[in-house]
Length: 427
Image 1 (cartoon, helix red, strand yellow):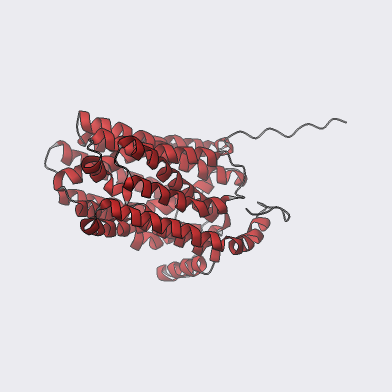
Image 2 (cartoon, one colour; image 1 turned 120 degrees about the vertical axis):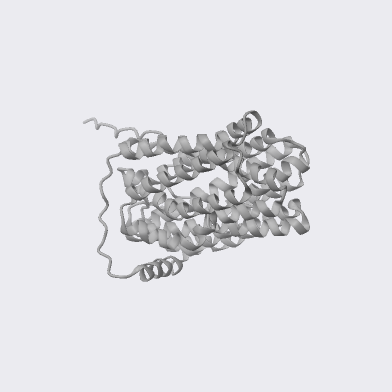
């Protein structure tokens, strides 16, 4: 008797879910605007102040709320509707971008405006990031598609990272930075419309027996008593503190070292996006989480090598080439860490764990920006990035040495959830 072959799985399984299709479409448009604004902001700050320290301060204020408030944002996400929370954060982010656009269009913008609005965006991100991460499992109808959805998210972010700065550089050179802010504000309409078009089943929110501080403590104890979660959070914190400083130094390298303008700055950020997009595409083709631990171990080293090469380069073509490795290492770090955490965490603590991930990743970036800005004033931006690259490589070595122990701990979790069979190596 002939048996009917099993249905062929689509190349991108996450797109079997209508809600995830809507999420991808809305976020894809909005993120292009976000990257345009990031490029425009650093260019405008450097144009107004000509100061690497001020670049560090603006980067610090935009993301420091994530460091202090992310654990509380995670508790909020675990206790209330993730879906409605995300709609609210997107509306507030749209208002922030449009205010920035109005100030720039009217020509009255000053550095304190940028710092204040960056701080406001930081408060929004403290809730938006854990909400965004926690919503993805609710949008994917088949649990087996979760890893693919996370990989697609990373590819989407870095596809926007490729397109946004390229468009932003042309807009800045052609009609000015204000229009980057304006288009970013308008792009939020797409993501809000996509969210409103979804049919999301309300998650079951457990009855809370503790106060806010107890819930924060519970999330901290759960995360740091788990060796895999603790190791991933610490590695992410190191990479964010040291490896993400290059973002605020791009204008300095563009103008003072490569003798370029806003177009060259856009090309450099786009080159990083190409590397990240390549890594993201590779991750979307993976069918399993097996092997992600090894990728996570090598990702910071790839980033570190790229940073060292970029800091030593004195030509635009070579700088573009090194930025490919920077982008590749970054995406492998972010996506691998995110996927492993999402697949091992308990559902009722997902918001709090992902908020700590946001704290370790986004929250450490402003501290690294501030430290990098201060250090660059004394030893120069190239030397600062060389030190950052070396630190990332050392982080890779330390995490790689812990990998066998972490695999042994993760295996029973994957077997219990049906992700692994008992004879399958974790990788």
